[in-house]
Image (cartoon, rainbow, N blue to C red):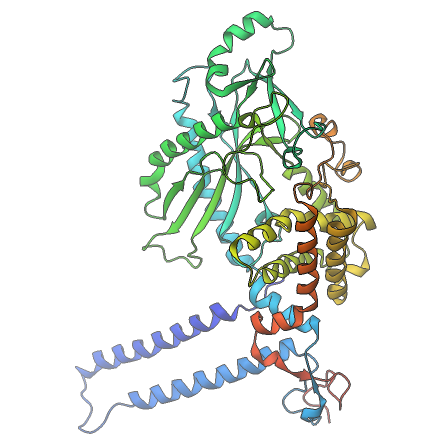
Length: 534
């Protein structure tokens, strides 16, 4: 995706004001220091008030010129200064949806590439030091100093919208996978639960991970050698030892706390860091706050979710804890049928396959394709639709139309077409956004399904290459299966209502107020006349 750099007025004008103030102060200091050598005659003020007035007039003039430039930027059809074409109020109309969307995108949705780049680099440095410290410390957990202990692998994997170029608003939240290293004698056998008929829909996307002996190893000796690890990190499920996501998550949070204590002192000069444990329902969150001595240009407070991940081959990771998409699942997970245990459930992360799919689409998209911009605006549409809802309804709305669901809908539409074509250029932004809204409505009301882009029927094997065995053998995962019919109908109705009221919502919550009225296309001669044209 090509990156377009535009002037950020929120940053530019404070810098200009500070620079003008600094120049005035510098003049005052120089004038004061020169006054000791040559005092002006009585009654003469040295011209300082005159300079102040001149500077204020200059700043006012620049502000007016900038306001006009911004108007010309968002109203390309308006007549420019010096043009002989004029229009009257009767030729004004409400701004089009395209103008309102562009203004809202620039002012409320779009992320500055400069700020996002600085934020990602800052997160990478802090998390890198923390992970390296955790690897050096070893594992003082259930098996202190033993060879059969968990440990950090030493690297980390950045996932999520911030690294796929469709994050919106502020770069203040990041997701990072922290791969764990298993002891050499321990081998895993992951299995999808999608084929379990008696399982609740919320758990059909989960996996269990049994321990197995390496090929050629005597089973009795292997069980004896792995007993310390199995007692510390595993639970019994149907007579076999399974890796427990809850036990691994508990060890992971404690090990992160100890590792953070090791690097906290070295980070004091750059930032302040703290770790919030997530218990057994959420991964821990690393909070990065700018310190008072940090004079960088991007002083943002950031929250980084550190997710423990177990590599099961071919770029596939099992993550703890498993996702809980159903709004009714709050607190500890309920008991499962068939001898399964909730603390043995793992989620699966397919970020690498999804990134390959996005790269495949980008290679085949025409220059200037707006499909990622449509995804960003779709997220903003969801956020606008949540306004006015009570906390419970807003939570359910956000879960049904989560960012992952919206990304999956976009990928489904693009794969249905084969690849982004000429219909995905900027000129058709409103049509493509409406097509996505209609597709989501059909998924919620007509089809009642939205399958995972990798774990769905057929998956994305043709686009990203052969899928790993653990994904090929997994049953299709429906992202909407956890929600009942009534919840889906309410979400679809509110989505359509938000789309129909979008122009009014954008005028209320959108960008500059001068977009309230704009010239009627074709009235008088308002289309692109140069200033010196008669």
